[in-house]
Image (cartoon, rainbow, N blue to C red; front, side):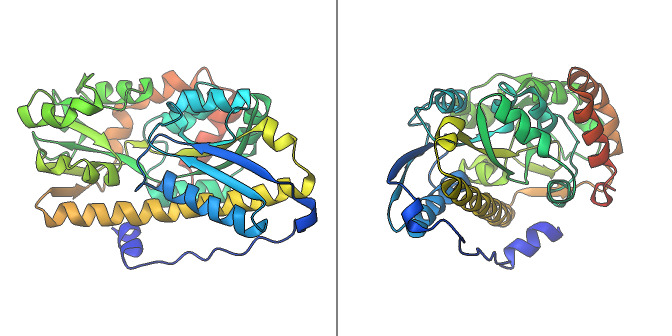
Length: 334
């Protein structure tokens, strides 16, 4: 798989230094960033990068306090805190963002994107500016859209080759409505098992399968109690770096430019770390005997989940549906 191989071979990311923002234009600030994942994952590693860049580029005038593992609440709590101005930054999954800005439901629908390269091509070549405008109207400063990755299905019943292979497999999903509908459309029975109880449920056969990012599947050792992994781009695992609009609006133009540039680099750091971690996780699970297969023909999966895309897109603005059509016409979607 070229994407993972290229990362595994050590593709380097070059982070340019921040230009502008003379030191005298920068005020002393202590800001907070809360997120829900553990410290080894890219939300946190990129947040720590952001912390370092802020201190470096302001001669220590800016301090970013990073709180991992849900220490400041869940993802919806974090977004509420941004609106209240009691937290300054967060990384959240687009499922949480869609609760506040409905257009982000685009990222939660199945098979809108077909590969990490497809996500990257879409974000780099198409116009996503309306997401930033709608986030602004809802009271957020959207810094960037990142994590070009997927939640891949793993199960104990059979290898997944076509949509029919999901029939009657009891799958545990993230709990996002669009994700649940997706696996039901594919023929699965969706289990409501909590994440904390999932390993035991997979071990005993109460649940047959689950889906998650490769790094999470490996970190939770689910490959010890699962036999088959399919690199099927069912639903994207895209995340957004968001800032409190009240914090951003209170800054000078120079400070805002500094946040924009450091934020851009933070998203790039997150994406690079995500790709590296997923590549390493995939190789580790293969080495431990997990049976992994890729899908060359997505047509049966795309056809089976068409009603899900129709259901969730019909209530969205026409521009979102137009953008989805553009995404699916990109060369990397073929």
